[in-house]
Length: 591
Image (cartoon, rainbow, N blue to C red; front, side, top):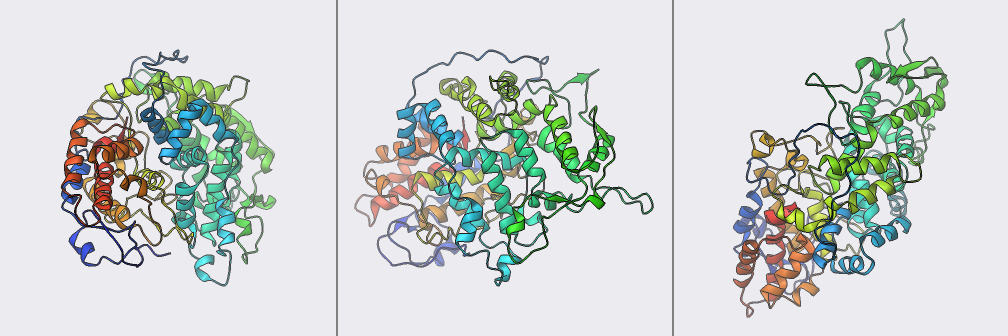
């Protein structure tokens, strides 16, 4: 799919900054999507660079986590500073719970309340699956080698759902899961890679509101996961040849998907002995667990269609270990899926799972540094949904999004440490959902955005390794955040280079879209003659009203440099307001 904007008819145009080289190559576009250059790119760049990952700054937007004695039971929920839901509060909630807010979604939350909106999302059926969309676009045609041996259709499918999907909470949770239950499409060593990755993304979407134990079972039987973590075709030990089972999946299943490397209290704090963290598992645990995942293979040998990429893996008895495997104090034996499910049950019942999974989901959706009490409350919901069920994702999602630490906007805004840096993919989808981006041809020609010098430095399903783009314990070294014991996962992919690339790329998208992926700025243009009304509306929808007064003043001043008598004034003023908001640290950090 093409990555660059396509030519269109020449009508009125919008004017915001563009690098000189890009401006020289600018193509003709339709009136509502084209933005020409103005002298505000420098302002946008400066705004974006203010809180880059390379500097300590004030640490605004991140929560400090001290290390007092562990709390074995969850702390009662604090009292909300205010219980009145405002449009700003609804927008803030949507920034946590979806891929981006718009005026209609803000109104929907105000109408139903947050709890009611969540329940409505739980009741909503899934949109068309990634798999079915790829088939509908004929990407399953084996005569096209780019379908069979390449990645045709993958990026359009993920952007289509992230931007236009009608199940935004499901989309958001699935993306949060993908951030730590990682597969990167470039690491899949199979034919039909777009379909293999689509099947995995669909698996996450299907189980986003289900049970975490069922999700673990589905992941273990998934073709893409089997290839990515190299247990596909793993064989039992052969003493005569020295062959040993592949240990990759066994290790990452414990380290990254369920337990973590250190034993945890239920509030997420690390258990210590004489000042030393207690490890969760040993190398022998890894070796023993790896025995269970032997003999797994694709369901059949038919490569004329992609169908086997979504069929559950099967076990070749000759390669499967049927002897006992003892790990984490438990034992399974007999081989086959009974042993696999028994092993997953042992992992699922481990006390680390609830706080480990809960904290990562909180970090991805609400705040980089949740308090131990917040983690404890969510972990308690994971451990028991109120009806004795462990791993109920609906209970976990409710606990995360309805917790006072998530909902108390007054306390968050008063804090210098609350919130998280928005990751680049969500900044793009925030813009796209806010301003009604569509792709009339259904081509969704955004493409791979992981380039760090020209794009976002991040793209859905394109993590370079099983550790993903973001690491939950990361803090920028040598910064005030690191010195305060804080974590800032998103800063792992934030630097001066990526900030500049982000601003340049978003300038291109805001100004002209890409292909026929275009925004509809008509509602904003109706406000553009009044810079205060325009900036206030952009602030509400994109930044949940969190732009500081000085930032608002600076953006209004830039907007007002474009006189109302200028050509395409309302279009150009709208573009400036949007781009400068997207570039501001007040937007980049969601509190």
